[in-house]
Amino acid sequence: KKDAGLPENGFIFCCFNGLYKATPSIFAIWMKILSQVENSVLWLPDESILAVKNLKKEAKRNGINDNRIVFAPRLDSREEHLNRIKLADLFLDTMPYNAHATTSDALQIGLPVVTCIGKSFASRVAASLINSMTLSELITDTIEEYELLAIELAKNTEKFRLIKDKLNENLPISPLYNTSLYTESLESAYTQIHENNKQALKSNHIYIN
Image (tube, rainbow, N blue to C red):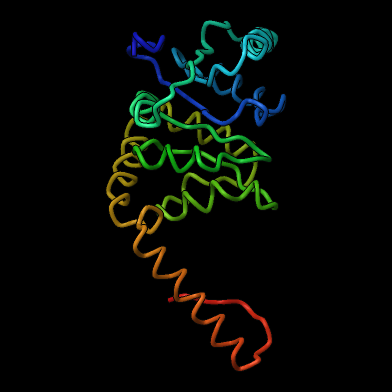
């Protein structure tokens, strides 16, 4: 943690989405979360000097010491990146544009993700991925619930441990990373589409068992 500029004992919130997804409103919520969780930090990707400067300035404007915003330089190796983000405790999703691949990355290494589900495709991807891990308790319906859940998980050690344990237990059995099952399901869908076409059936939804 020291090498990454992170505190040894503080709670580490993170978000490795592209910083363009961090709207002023969601960043303000993150600052409110930090204000409620003592010794916590927010770990973000270091995308540019300008972004770092502006976000540190925005943290101060929200009453948060800018040294509690830690920036991670880009790594060329995906494996190194995944190993590094294991240092975080909780991933805070963005909205209305969710984390997509970055949610998958986080779940894959056992990092819980808190999200707020929306109505558009882009705002529902994280919830879909989290549901594949049977962790609906990490999906909130409002920004207020999102804020409260993030604070609770950081403060309630037992609840946080149960979430982490459940994620790690569900990882091996989740369909999310089961490439063989995905391939079989996709082939089954193509076969069903072909059969429907041969019979001149009206286009409709395809359901895979």
